[in-house]
Structures are given as structure tokens and as C-alpha cells.
Image 1 (cartoon, rainbow, N blue to C red):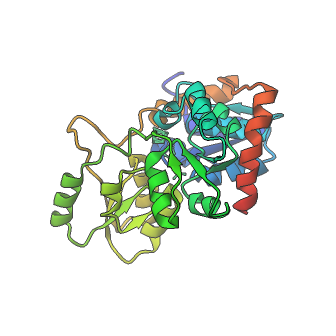
Image 2: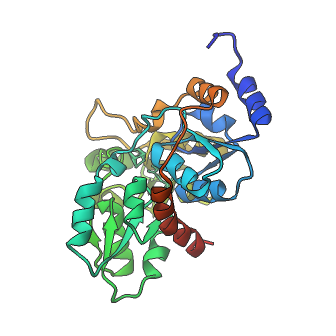
Length: 310
Ligand code: 13P
Ligand code: SF4
């Protein structure tokens, strides 16, 4: 790509030429968020993907998100700027091991967090995201045993909120598990007025200290409306871009990780760049493709989720 090329202008041109829509997650780099047609949490992105009339969906997020868009749109082209944009949480549930786990508990139904592969979705009865997990779990009769996968932290949080005792798969997100309670509490001493905002993928010891727990969209809305002017943010750092745009007068401090060498960036989300976004729109690849049998099996639990979330 020539260094003189105005990527923002070129991307806008390609959008029109190809009737393309850019869907971006809040963890994407700021430039990508600024060029997107829609930015949202996982539920919002799935809902947008389900209703778009664009010919090409350019998914600025990670693989399982683009895969979900493809599952909902078999006749549209779905491209992802970097095919290696995976997810540690999705990786924590390998298909065969999960199939065995499910078979060992035949009377359980399976609720899977959307951060999983199409194969795991195909083995699930219903999908949820962090913004609708409570509602989805509560839609299941109380005496029905449930397996919740793959995120044990979100599962434990929902167990606590609903009083259920779901059987939890032992998966987690590498980004949300690195926050240091000790350093957060120290920060809180320096900024006593600051409210702590946390994503439910964080460990329980962090969630216990939080003033608000929610999905990325819910955290953003809270920060916008709340009267506090300082916030400690325990989720991926990409979200700070919209927070600062929404409320330039407020102070947003990323929650510190426990290792000085670590940061709050998701290495997978940050594989996508503006240049890769431009190239994938121009050449219409890498493209998400899937076997029809797998697509249909994975679609069912997503549709169930979308129906309940209306
Ligand atoms: P939400 O945007 O749905 O809160 O999901 C967060 C996440 O970790 C996505 O990978
Ligand atoms: Fe997966 Fe965590 Fe990255 Fe989200 S932040 S894509 S859950 S590794």
C-alpha cells in the first residue's frame, strides 16, 4: 500500500462500490472504529449482521464474530482483515473434548457464550452474549440442568445472579484474567472518587470490587450517563476510544495488569489494522467459508438467542 494513499477515503469509496458494510467491535483500534458503519458489543454486532442488506460484510473483530455473521448470511460475502484474529476463550473449548463433556452429561442442555467456534455452537442448544446471558439462562426452567461454556468467569457470575448451579466449562479470556486486584485497589486509593467498571469475563475477585459490571456497550452507556467523572476500566483498552469520545471531560484509567510487561490489549483483536481492512475490502479476502451442514447446525442456537433478545 502506497504511503500516500488516504486509507479513510479509499475505504469509503470501496464501501459504496461494493455495497459493503463495516461492522466493528469496541476492542478494535481507534482508526477502525472511526471508519466503521456500526460499532457494538457481540449481541449488537450479531443483530446488525442478521439485518443488513449489504452485499459484503467486512468484519472488524475476531474470527468467531465474522463466523457468526456468515452463519446468518450464507449468501453474502463475509471478510475478516486478518484470518488469524482468533480468541483464547474460543480456543479453550476444543470440539472433541467438549463433545465428550456434553455426552458425559446427557440430561443437561448447553448454553454457550458466543465467544466459541461454529463447531461448539453446533453442539449447543442456545447461544448468549454478556449482555443477554442472564435473560437467556432465566428463559430455561429452573429444574433443567445446564452446561455453560466456555467462559467460567461469566458462568460463575450468572450463577450468582440467577441462583442457578450451572455446570461450567473451564475456559477463560487471557485479556480479562490479567488484571491485578492489588494494583486496582492502589489506584482506587489514588482516585477515591473513581468508579470501577468491569466486564463479566473478569475473575470474581475483580468483579467483587466493581461498581458496574456489563458488556462493552453496557459499560459505555454507564460511563456516559453516570455522574462520576473518573473511571477505572477493567476490560480491553480499545473501549477507551469511544469512552473518551463520548465524555471528553471525564477521566478513564485502564485497570492495571498484574505483570508489568502485559497490557490490556487483546492480541487477536489488534491483529486487524486499517491497512489490512482496506486490503481485505479491495481483494475481498480473507473470506469466511463454511460447510452448509455445520452452518445450519450452528445457526439454530444463534436464532434462538436472537428471538429471546428481541
Ligand atoms: P461484548 O462486546 O459482547 O461485551 O464482548 C466482549 C468480548 O470479549 C468480545 O471478544
Ligand atoms: Fe477473545 Fe478475550 Fe480477545 Fe475477546 S478479548 S477476543 S474474549 S481473547
